[in-house]
Amino acid sequence: MSFEPKIHAEPVDDAGGKLKRRRKRLRTVAMLPALLTMGNLFFGFLALYCCGLELHDLGAQVDAYEAQTLNSPRIEAIAPTYLAVGVLMLIGAMICDSLDGRVARLTGQASRFGEELDSLADAVSFGVAPAFLMVTMMRREVAQWGYVPFGYERFGQAVLLIAVVYVLCTALRLARFNVETSLDEAAHHGFRGLPSPGAAAAVLSLIFLHEHLDFGGTWGRLAGAITYLMPICTLVVAFLMVSRIPYVHVLSILLRRRPFGHIILVLMVLVLVLLHPSQMGVVLAWTFALSGPALKLWRRFSGRPIVAGAPAQTPPGSEESPPQSTERKWR
Image (cartoon, rainbow, N blue to C red; front, side):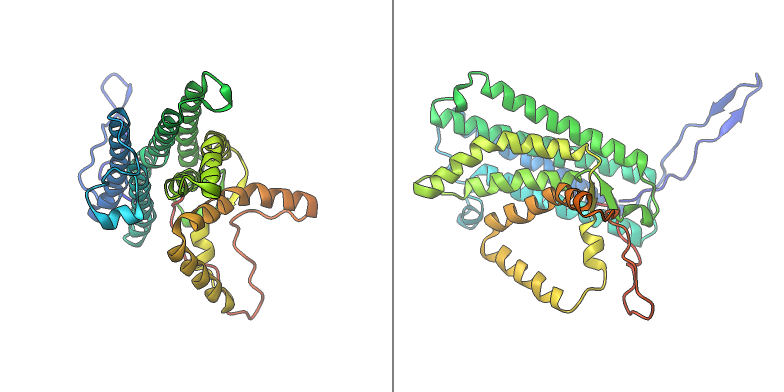
């Protein structure tokens, strides 16, 4: 994501000898990156709106799985509830978030202003919206059960507190990333702490799977287990965001030259995602979320210190070359 202010603040000596700073004034912005970032924020707001619709139906005692989501049978087949529609909205936010930085880099418009604006949108789409979706789902399930899980009378307050912790950790994660990371491409080959879109994907994948399960038999027990574990899982990814555990940059790995067989593996994964999107979403999101701690433990016990995201060493005479650039995304 990129914008570039035309006038920079510079110290100016006035008649009294005191230094003053000129006020910065933004004259122009890069249109396409700005629109993509606004798209990120737009989808995040729509996800919050879907939570409002779900809570409205809950107050009106409308069954979540009998409600008409956007009055479209096609949408209902993919997203049977408003919460599932909200998850799809945040997937749209992730797409915009992954594109705006790349467009900004290709046009040479990277700047601190664009970085801060992108972080504001991420705080809503990957911080507030996933937490609100989680709270809404838990509130609906507890209301339908008629009892609180674990017999804990303050369960609702505990869920709300966990959601607040998640939002605060997202804000801290984004602020720390902006302070510690420079704008050059070499600084974005890896991350310290789980990126905020990765944490949001972990929470959203559980919600999306829950909304697609039939509440009967084995699948009903799985849906109940997801409801019980959702607050704990949300708290885990919140702490992973503010940790110092190294994570690889997924896009930088995909952009590197790989053996031909890796293409077949990626195609197989894509086919599975198309056939079983809700199940594969959980597998992929939580594989990435837990890859950082797993890699750290493997390095500790194997004695092989590897910096996450570091460019791979290319043997002499090999055709493989490091990627020319990677975008500054996946915070």
